[in-house]
Every structure is written in structure tokens, then in C-alpha cells.
Length: 465
Image 1: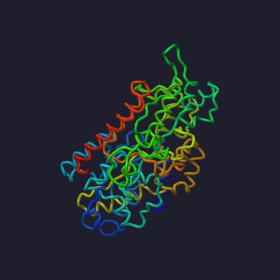
Image 2: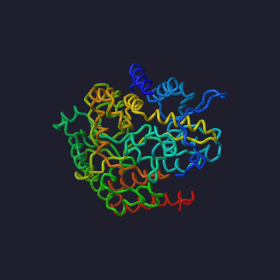
Image 3: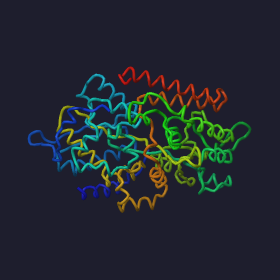
Image 4: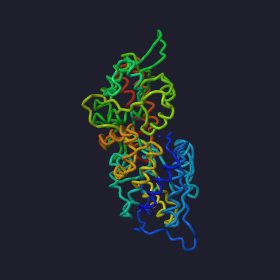
């Protein structure tokens, strides 16, 4: 199998698709006997798998090429054909999954589905999902131990892997090195804390009266950011270790002091005058146009940012600024995982396991990383000569990898089914405090009350209480 993998790297590199754009257990699946052999195709022909995904643009091309190379190599050997089908955004894709699950329409479910980290709590409770742990336990060559521990933790519940990590990322600070130089700042020393972020942003902002022609930083904290800012302080957003040891039923940030510390530092940073917050702006576009000096974005957005900038100025990447200089927890993992659906055909489950192994292999993960910007989920990818050469040629990619490896596996997004409600409550209450509409204690109390109600309503409706 090694030889076809190397061929994949060569083929995709030549094609230059290197442009980037982001439990319930099944009893029948657990009872599936160990099988490392290829599915039988004696009289029925190849085992055909449908793969629903949400990777658009250039990323979709990489998904297609990886699938095609699987079909031409491992698939050809074992009698498996996988067909990737783009389903739009994560939201569009999950609407279709939820509709089929609610209607118990197993016939119209895919064999493999890509789901974002924010939907892990929902996915683990779908009765048709075959947990990744079950697949790995059936095949000794499916090595979870080779995968990034932070990423494994992100998609695990009670120590058992639910989904197979696929397109994973963290959050980075992007900045314009040319504007740093113009402002008298050292472009090789980006802000390390939120307080420094505020100070730097003030120096990088250009205003004519109350109108800014250039902002130092733009952004409004929501769950995506706060998962890291709370976690790096050593705290959890919600109880039961963010819902990973048992159902998340209430928040903890209101009592462990992490939210108050974060909000205090954030308001102080905004007070320096260089942070645009609460505004609905296209940060990528503003940054590429040279009108925004710093912003936060996914590590998977690096190639897209570089393409948009087009060499007009030098781009820098940095770790997410800490709440406090002494914080050691690092950042949370985002992105998505692949889930195998049990549609009553063991041959398809076995075939899906082969694709899961293939998609997480060291060689395939190099192709995925270099073609999209998502970091590789397989630790052995870093041993590949192609990967070492890639990082030497593209040092900006090292920032995301170094930050990931400096982060604790305990720093994670909360596992719950009301992430949208949590994010909205956080965003609105922090903004109310920053704009002096509420004092900090009232804002935090209101935030906690809103989130706890959303959790209670969902858990009650779904028999989780």
C-alpha cells in the first residue's frame, strides 16, 4: 500500500491543486466481527460508497483527487468505489443528515458523512453511526495512536473516538508585516497577549476624526475564540470537562473566573482605541486590501489569505494571543471528522473502514495538508521527506503546527448540541460589557443563564436530563 500512496503525492503535486479556501453506539456495528479482509465482490461487483462532504472550491478538488486515487489503488485492489458528493455548507449538509435521521430514512443516508466539530454531540447520538473506535478495534492496522492526540480528544467521548479526524485546524493571528514596520513595530515580534494586541492595534490604526481608514485589529469574540481563551487558562466552558465525560448540563466559566479574566483583558484592549469590534466586516477582504493590520482566522485559511494578498505585502502568522502571559493551555481544535453510517450492509461498513484508514494515513494527510492548508492529523506525516521539504519552503505553515503541539489536549470546544446559542450569547453579552451597556457581573450572569437554559431545553427534549 505504500507505493500507491507515494504515487498519490506525486500526482497531486504535479496537478498543483495547492490552493485552499475550514455517544450513541450502534449495537449491530459493535457486534460486527473482526475483518481485515476486503469486502466480497464475488457476485455483486464493487462495493460503492457515497461520501457527503462540505469542502467547496479548491478544497473540493483535493477531496475528489484523494478519492479517485483511492479508487485507482486500494479501492481497485479491494473492490471499493467511493463517490464524494458536495452538499454545500456544513449547515446545508447537516440539515440533510438531520432530516434523514429524523425520518429514519436510512436508504437516503450516505455511507460516510463529514460533520463539523460543533456537531459531535449530535453525531454521537445518531443510532446509525458506527463509532470510529469500533472500526479501529476491528482492525489492528487502523492505528488511532498515530493520530494527533489533541485531534483525537476533540472527537472523543468518554475516551472513545466517535468520528475519524479529517479536516482539522486551530485559530491563528494573521498580520501585515509591512504595516508593522510602518508603525515602528518589530514584524518578528507579534503580540503575545490580549493586552499587547490592544496596544499594537492602537499603533496600527489610522483615523481621520472618528472614521478609520485602517484598523489595527477587527474581531468580536464568540465561541470559536473563547474555547481557546477559556481553555488556555486551564478552565472549561461547561461541566463534565466540556461535555466529554458526560452530558454538558451547565457552564463553569461564571464560577471559575476564566470568563471574568478574559472579558476584563478584552475590554482593556478595546479601550486602547485600535480594535474594531461588534461590526460585521469581511476581515479577509479588508486584510488583503491593506486596510486591516491584524485579524484572527483558521489555520486552514492560510493559503486563501496568501492568494488574496497576492504578494502585495508580507503576511505573518502567530499564535493566538494569550489572556495572560502565563497561560499554558494553548488552543482548541476545530474542523471536522468523518463518520461511518450503518445502513444495514456489513460490506459497506468494512469498505468505509478502508477509506477511513486511507484518508488518515501519513501520505494522504500530506497531500491533504499541502493541498488545503489543514494540518495533517497523522503524526507520521512529519517524517515524510516531502513534508519536511514543504515546511522548509512554506515556513508560515509551521506556526499552526507548532501551536497545536504546544497545546493541551484538554483545551477543546465544548461538546454540546446548542453551540450556535452558546456562541450568540457569548458574543452579545461580551459586546454589551465592552460598550458599557452592562457591568461585567451582570453580563456574565446573563450569559450563563441564557446558555444554561438552552442546554436544559435541549437535554430535556432529548432525554438527556
